[in-house]
Image 1: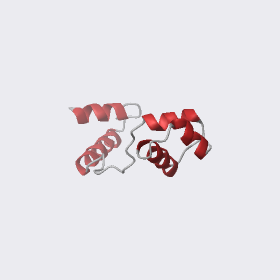
Image 2: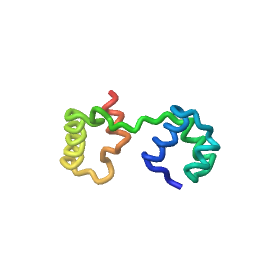
Image 3: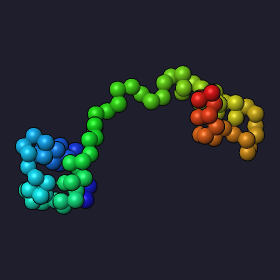
Length: 90
């Protein structure tokens, strides 16, 4: 059973702020006690990321790698995701 964000927040609210037991929450919301226990243990932050993962410089570097691959004309020796990552780390 997939729980949406509203149900997750409701479980956390009842558990943390109202002091309800996990068994009582499961009974009230008609869901498994195991599910309630799982979401009471977790401390997920569902806020979106503040900054994009790929910057303009990284995007330009990746596009240059692809341009190099097409200009060389090799069929088997192309940049893989692993190789691009290794070059970015360097």
